[in-house]
Amino acid sequence: MAEIIEKIAKSTAWDKYSNEDLKFPADSVLDAWETGKSDGKKEQVEVLKQVLVDNVNAIAEDVVELVGRLNQRQLPVTLALLKLVGINDFTILVGINEDDFLSDKMNDAYTICNEIELSRRHKFTLRFTFVGDDGNLDLDEIKADSYLLIHKLFNKNDQSS
Amino acid sequence: MTSLLNHAKHHEIAFEHLLQNNQCYGWSIIAAFYSSLKYIESALYPVEIEGVAYKSPAQYYNNYVVPKAKEENRIANRHHALIDLVSTKFPEIIADYRALFDMSLNIRYNSDMFNKQNKAKYTDIAHKRFRAIKEFCEVKIAEKTAESGSSSPENLSTVSEA
View 1 (cartoon, rainbow over the protein chains, first blue to last red):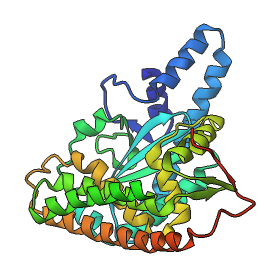
View 2: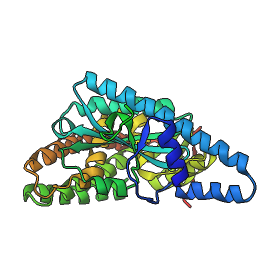
View 3: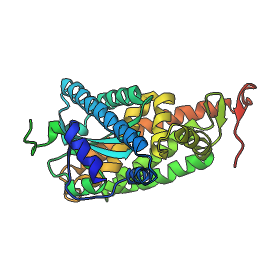
View 4: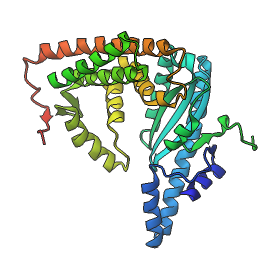
């Protein structure tokens, strides 16, 4: 598990959001990879890992698109976190300023995220979910729900950018 | 449809009670969401997908969503399956439904949810979105009821109850 998270953090626009070795939903899939490894199916394991990294890279681009389109509508994004549900299943938690989250402007946000989700459906399942950010989000609770990667755009600790 | 509608009304009573008594605003949002979910299911079913009629949410999920997810090596999820149905069948209310879904799911991430000064804003927007969904669904349910005298189209296959 730690290995694939490190690989994603090094090679994509996502950073580790938690240093704890937390279990998350994709663990069962990744455990299957490890079984594959022991069965001598190393090539297959590497192909699956690359599929995951490619998907995560594509989703990073989707986040940039979403942030840009929401900015155009005066809906600034405060946070974008990724949950790996499976190799082909992902959820993004998007923070929106609470006053905006509780306004009709969110109708546009849902139209846009629906479009982006559908554009990826042929390849993988992507779901956006929004939270009103009042500056007091319980980040430990969020991490415990398996949002373990943060988009570099929102990583205040990122030294590389 | 009647059972689903009874569920919708049951959750609606809970929502209205909490709203009127200004209590447990987090639960009031969750009740609004579940009432909306059941109103939508009442309006949707029986639903036709790719030439097949599904009588109930469980039948649709077990006989369409799960096999399709397995085929595509993806993970099936009932909430997401309904969001996809609303998106294609009732796009007019997809933003209202997704907003209620997100509010009910993610309100727990607000660490000061019990002391919020703007609780009324949350319940106001939840109420507004709930009303939009309920009114839309009531029209659809009335239309389905009016059509119920006619039988299923001849070229439409149906899935039998498990």
